[in-house]
Length: 256
Image 1 (cartoon, helix red, strand yellow):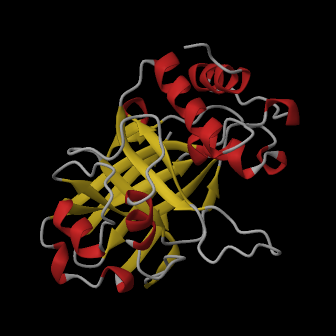
Image 2 (spheres, rainbow, N blue to C red; image 1 turned 60 degrees about the horizontal axis):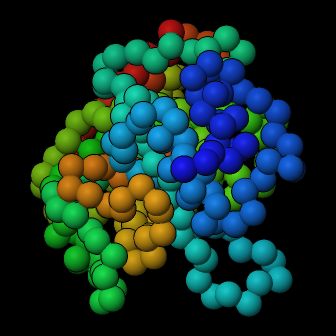
């Protein structure tokens, strides 16, 4: 498989931990191309898919489409960190911190003709957990990059840590879990809910019914993080991140 210029630049930036200047000539033309870039980057790095992140593409103000298009981006095994462990910051390469609710699949969710329901998705989940995601774009000028090219770059996933886990998630109101995020003891978020879609399973259900990636789809043993519950916190220095979700527990990660 030949590699696109965008995939080659992203893979190199991942290896060197040095961002590059995004140029319009590099842009992925459509979402199918973005998913090809994701697969090419995984192949270049020899990376396996540990999990996924999902969301919805923004709708243009003039759009007549009623439902936004779901998207998914892989989280590679090489970007996983242990809760209680550390992530080494690259010089001049700041991160943004997000506290998240995630789930792990107990069985595959293959593409099928009959749409998955929310209950189908719940039945496929083996457990839920507290996650900490570090957002790191490979684009030095990420504000200049278009949405589809950001998707090609795994929507800026830089690292992920999984904390406390529960199998008793069905008894929780996932849309109203209290989320607390502190950095070096300073509290940046402490509220119920906070997911942009209300019910954090909404983007997962939508993606399960629209799977279009080129990395094998949603598989048993993989996890999926459901999106941030706080306004991302920028950080460019050593710090201790502590996140908690009501009814589940805590996760922590030290930036060094």
